[in-house]
Image 1 (cartoon, rainbow, N blue to C red):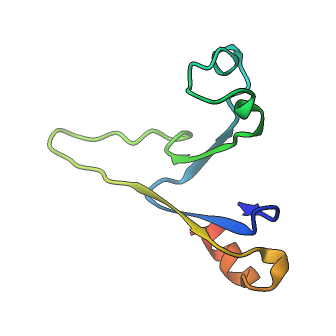
Image 2 (spheres, rainbow, N blue to C red; image 1 turned 90 degrees about the horizontal axis):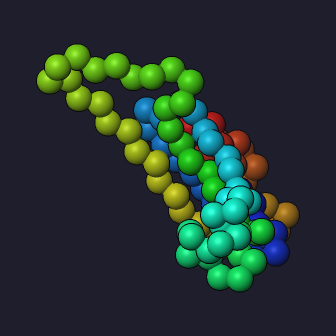
Image 3 (cartoon, rainbow, N blue to C red; image 1 turned 120 degrees about the horizontal axis):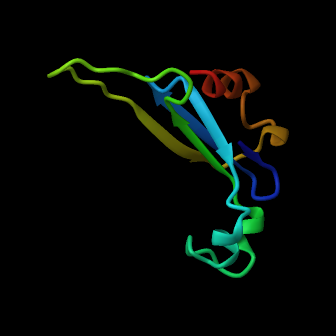
Amino acid sequence: IIDHERKRTMVIRNEALPDADLWTPWDNAAKANRYGFGGNDYKTMLSVDSGVLEKPIILKPLEEWKGYQELSLISSSYSSGQLDPKTVAFYAKP
């Protein structure tokens, strides 16, 4: 996710989480501030989650499954020339 205004890029890495969920809390709960947003913050909020959505993982007794999502910020902007476009494509599809 590239934020040109703040000159930063959010890099999302994950393992064993093949799907992504992109959503905004534009609903009555957000407007009622049930999520803890200030004022109209919910209007500019975007959530990107990695997960297992399409095909469930079914475990047998005593089996384990692990997955993780890592979020990090790079203090740069793609348009500044400081961020390699190949790296952006790599991180977008780990």
